[in-house]
Image (cartoon, rainbow, N blue to C red):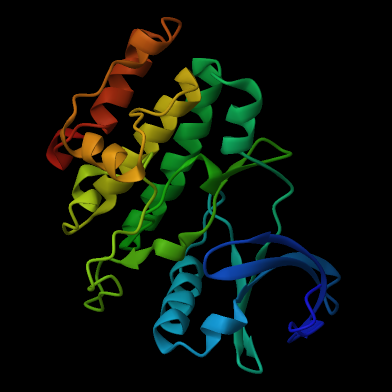
Length: 260
C-alpha cells in the first residue's frame, strides 16, 4: 500500500489495492465492526485539493448511493479521512464482461442476451431515479460468481434533474468504443444514451468486435455519429436475426428510434 495513504478510512481497515482509475484508487478493505469486506474507492491525493474533482467524486458516490437494485453495485457509506474523500461499496467477487469477452471472443447469443437484460434492468431503475450512467461498456459490467450482472462506476453519472453541469467545459466523458452519437456531440443526454452504449456492448459480446473500428479514438467517435452500423450477422453469422435486430435498434443514430 502506498505510504501516502492511511491504513484506515473511517471504520475500514485497508488490506490491498485492487484497482486504479483516472480519478481514484480502489482498495479491498474490512469493515471491522460488521466483519464485512468492501471495495473502498478513494480520490487520488493529488486531486483531493481540487474542488472540481472533489465535487465530481462526491457526485459519483451520491448518484450511486441513490440506487438500490440487484444489478447495480451497492454503495454503503460516503465519508472523508483527513483531506481524502472516499466511499465504501459492495465488493464484487467475479470478473468483468470485458475480461470474459477477451477470454472467449464471441459469446453465445443466449448467454450474452441474459447479461444484457440484467444490465438493462439496472439501467431502468437508474432512469426511474433520473440518473444516467454515461459510460456503459463491458468493463463496467461485472459478473458475480453467482451469475448476477452488476453495473459499476457511476463515476460519470449525472442526475438528469440537476442543473449543475460538471461537463460544462465541453469535456466529452465516455468511451470511444461505446459512446452514443449524442454524447459524442456534447448534446443533452437521457437514458436512451445508455441504451445505445448497452447496444454497443451487446454487439461486442456477440461478435467479439467493436461496432466501429478506427485507428484513433476521435475517428471512432466520428463513426458512431455518422457511419451506418454493420449488422452483427455480417461479423458473426451465428447471431440470430432477432438479436441482431435488437442490437441495431438499440444503436439507432437517433435516440427516438431506439427502445424507449
